[in-house]
Image 1: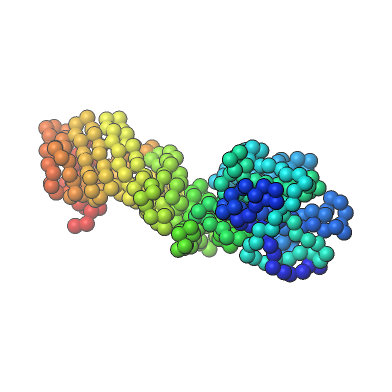
Image 2: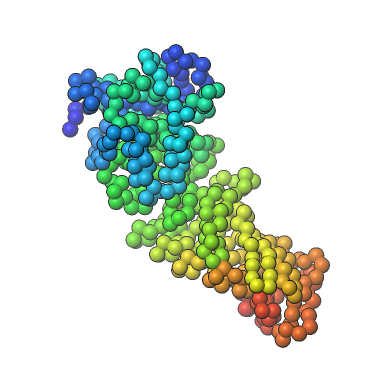
Length: 419
């Protein structure tokens, strides 16, 4: 174990400037990547990213770093390691990497000024802390977001370079309003964990616990994007509970404001809650079956729109609740609004009170509308024998129908409405 000294660390995290480049937004939040320098070590070990040292010595993680001749190749492997349990975040960091070359500026012969930050940490005895990088939330006029001390960079191994860039990517996410990081503590914890053996077989509960400890907002569960907290930038942040069963499978969570859900017939549907929806509500509450398949979604916004199609009809609806079978296939939605046009009749409901059942193929099998039925004109339906017409006008009682045109004899009991 390396002998270390505990002391308040100047982690160079926010609001600062470069020694010879003071034009870079002095009132802009910035983040510095901290690197330990130990003169007494052999040349290739003199520089180590603080995150990795703390992971090994403070968190006592068993390290699983990747060596190689190209730091970007190592970085892609690290992101892929994350992607196995958190594909949405891996996609985000891959997008950061794709723009990295044009957003990074390497400065030679420059010492970065100290940028005070809260936090504490540890250093090996006889070593010092130097600033290897600075990041700004808003890029410069020339488009530079990251500034690296090239004198330090040139003496680092590719493993350490990769770790330093990954630190900047994690902090870039942390600077987003919903995360609103004020220190780099969570960044260092996350980065160190990703470089440890714990990532080899990390469970969903362990990984979500890591994200919560790090302060990062979003996670992936069974193909769904979920919230861990919200409202950070408003000064009234709240954390959301994630529930598990005895097998460690997530049973309930809060959806993010944007997510992909399974629609009729298993088709993927993007959902984006608008700005009018309170951020604290997220996208709604999602529940899962013990096998991890989605069971039920209570929508937090009304942006889940459905196109309804059958051989003889087409329509659209918005849903307030969605129900799935144990295979994760949509079986029913409760409707907020509904419009359905059949060759023989049309239906329109502008208030909640009905639902639609689906065949497993995704076609609507049954439509039930409550007594908020509000077609502005008329709706036409075939009678039970398929002969003649039945006229239903606004304000008529609850009714239900199947797509073959049959009217339920006891609509309320068949449709499940309250008596």
